Picture 1: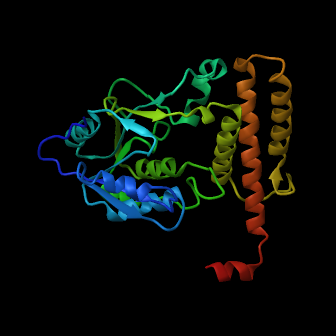
Picture 2: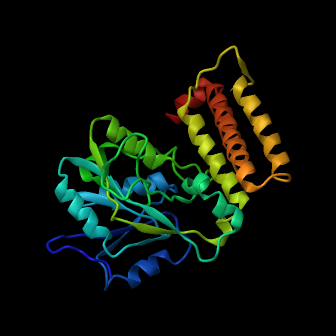
Length: 295
């Protein structure tokens, strides 16, 4: 049972983001047992759903999690203790461990350290340590002070949405918070478990995840063209795309996963970056009148 410290007033906000299932009925079924409140965001997209919560939340902090996560009984209590111990801090995060319904395939177990991020698994330390630009929590288990939640909105062009599996929306927000001088802490006791269905225990899933990650990296890079570009993409990216894909296709039939997993990651990431540069080129070549109409 979830432990809530005495004197703490809390509510559970659940966003219906264009759901076509029984989401509203499930929310209503818990109304007698939880301080639950249903929100509706008609514009599809994870960042849009998060931004609605930022407007509707009434507490001093927002603790974020996902619909496929099981929180520990101490989850809220650990965060509340951290809020009180570090009143100067604006953000906090805790570990996310995988929750498999089966014995995962051997190739995935042997490659886990290289692909854990693709399953939102993270554990920086078993001790309380400061957060940093290279050490930020994941969206399935983090807490942000309400003033920062509203000052740093999520970018709608990032985050899972129709037609795109690209994430990175929470990383973008948290790094902006830290860059502006706010403090953050890693809270090892505030743990959750993330459900990993069998359908995600495949190379196809990993290729898609790292493709989306490549899109995120490409979007963070330089948008300007140069004389060394070929069809709007840097020459180095053309080389990386071809070389890594050929290497992956060759090695996956000849080598163990410990060898070709790195090639899968590199090839998939390069494909995502390649696509991101293509979209940037399309944006640069759109007629000026179209930009005016959209604005």
